[in-house]
Every structure is written in C-alpha cells, then in structure tokens.
Length: 348
Ligand SMILES: *Cc1c(COP(=O)(O)O)cnc(C)c1O
Image 1 (cartoon, rainbow, N blue to C red):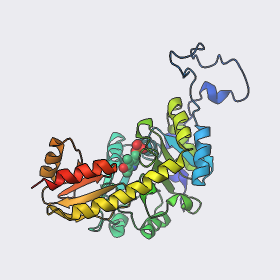
Image 2: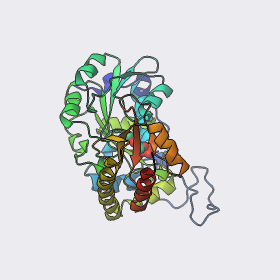
Image 3: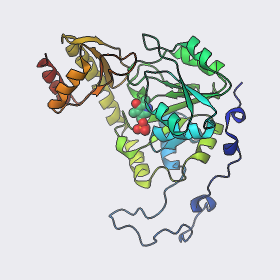
Image 4: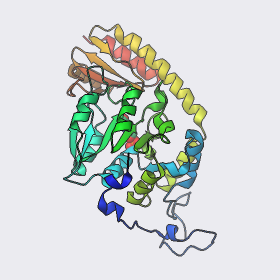
C-alpha cells in the first residue's frame, strides 16, 4: 500500500510553510496595510499592485468544472515544469534517492533530477515505444521514489499502453507521474479519472499546448489531497502571477475555440502524414496521438539544415537513442504545413 509518509522527505514532513499576509487574513476588509504593497496602484492601465491569490482559487474552480476534479485535487505551477521540480523537492532526498525514466522521453525530467541531485535510472522503451515493465521492475529499489511516464509521449508521439501504466500504479510503492501535456490530441482517455483508484498517481497537464497559452506559464498537477497539500507547501507562495491567473480564467471560457483548433490540428496531421509518405527520404512516420509527428528519414541533420535555410525550424531528434534519423515536426497552420511540404519537395 502507498503511504505518503514513507516517501516524503523528513525536512518536508517537518516544514513550516511560509505564511503570507494574504494567508493570515481571510475575510472582508477595504484597507490593506498588511503586505507592504504600493497602495496607489500600478503605472499601467490595469492595476497589479496587489499580490495574487497564492492558491489560485478562481482558476482552479473553473478547471475543476472542466476536468471534473475537485479544486483540492488540483495544483497549479508556473508551467508543468515547476510541478515536476516541486515533486522532486518534496519526495526525493538529494544524493540518496533515485527515479525511473523511460527514454526516449521529455528531457525536463532528467534536468530536474540533475538540478536536485537525484540519480536517474533509465529503462529504454521497447522498439515500439512501450514500457519495458520487466526492466522497470529490476531497476526499482528502496530508494526509488518516482517513475515518470509521458503519454502521449514526447518525442515519439504515441500513447503508452494503459494496462502497463496501471500495472505500475498498482505495484510501485512510490509515485507514478503521468505527464499528459498532449492529452487533448489523444484518442486515449485521461488518467484523471483514476485518481480515486490510485493514491500514488500524479497526472500532469498544461495550458501550454492545445490551450495555446505557453507564454502564460500555467501547468497543472492532479493528485490526492494529501499529495496536493505537500506540493502547495513546497511551491513558492505566489508562483502564478496575477496577469496569468486572469488571462487563464478568461481563456478557460473559450473552450469551443480550443476544441476547433484541436480538430483542425488532427486533420492537418493526417494530411501531413500522407504527403510526407510520398517523399523518398522519408523512411517511416510513427503513429501520433499528439500535435507533432516523429519522422524517420535518410538524413535528419541535412534535412534540418535545408529547412533552416528556408526559415522553417523543426526539431532534430536524430541523436536520441531509438530515434536515429528522426525529426520531430509540430503540426502548424494549414499554410505553414503547405510551406513545409513545398520546401521538402525541393530537397534531394
Ligand atoms: C511541452 C511539455 C510540457 C509543458 O511544460 P510547461 O512547463 O507546462 O510549458 C510538459 N510535458 C511535456 C512532455 C511537454 O512536451
């Protein structure tokens, strides 16, 4: 059975969190002389002189309606990258504990582990980009606190088999982080619905991809109330700024626009796949559940450089193990995708 106290760092268990002026007074008042803010206002058209809500209640309430999860099960980070870092700092003792990564996958897990001085144990995905459950079981020991699974996976684009993730959730005594940054594009359903089933599950999502708000830096973690409480204790008090909170709230009311873009992106993805298949230097295109495709070519570096000369930037992933010869191409607007194909037709 999962017991949060067995995997929490001692210093975090004993931590007295920072208490802000806004934490200490809750209620109605009209004169706020408690936080050393400038009471006159901001030298802008909008006032940002007051500190933002540390627990972002309004944004969480709206997200809660959209996702069907109570606000107490939601953590907001300055991008999901902050949520990843907070999870490391809460659960992993530097120089002592370890985590399991399953490359090829999102690079931030390893960077965050390195920053926090946490050993990474890498268990490569199989040839068809699925979990090697036996390898993972062998790599786990008493010091293993976290397993990161990205589904749909970046950079391969495929979803990870659901039963395999459930096997990990059911048998691993640490936390399984399921990063669903691309879930809006996927045919698979989110793991959010499994939160009541698995106490050791953390689901990451973000407003940076399908929601079109990468510059606002708003990421989400969904987990049990006890995990969320720990994450809130560890995060910087005002981690989501007021402008981002207001704009995120506004954007969350435009869900129809976003769903329209998702449908258009999927149609464009299918079209791009068909067009790329006709090019002789394209060896393979991997099935994608995301807004990008991984394309195996006869010469990734050369094609990358050729495109750069024409002002088109894709991602060269050819140095990544199991992605030899591969470019990762994000699906753009119809016009951008046409220009990409036109450019590639002239490559030889
Ligand atoms: C883009 C991406 C994110 C998003 O990170 P943010 O910090 O929320 O912008 C998270 N995970 C994966 C796998 C990604 O590809």
